[in-house]
Image 1 (spheres, rainbow, N blue to C red):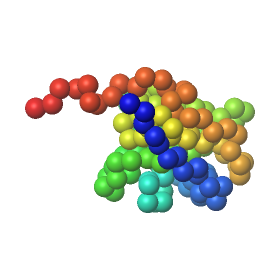
Image 2 (cartoon, rainbow, N blue to C red):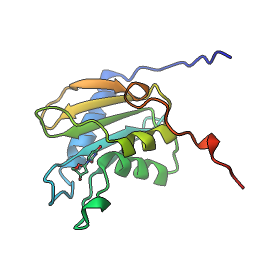
Image 3 (tube, rainbow, N blue to C red):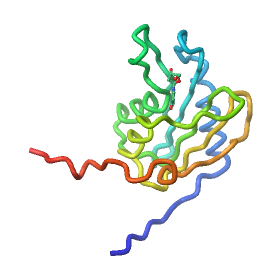
Length: 147
Ligand code: THU
């Protein structure tokens, strides 16, 4: 069976809004241990933007990444699909979502999810990744027995 998907490209002004939201929330990151501040903004299919920052803990392994923090905001608002995400980190190279975050994104998006990567203080994206290219064969929920 061939699946046909209509992929709507993210407009430049939408990327700008996502990066701005991610930059703003990055200022609120709680990162006293690593000093590495991350902001993320996810786009819902209706155009709403939800933002989240990383939240660290004295028990280091409890650190919550910005991407999962943003996804939690989207889900708490009653949405379960992500159309795009922007991530803002320090330089010199943009920070790509970690493995946990890639799996989390795959729960709410398909392989075509565009992931925009920006560096704090820069208005334009350094790169746009496609989720399926950086995280092939995610674990899908339809394999889990229910009931
Ligand atoms: N971090 C994120 O927020 N997103 C990622 O995808 C990778 C790492 C955060 C977690 C921790 O607070 C800091 O960056 C250093 O690992």
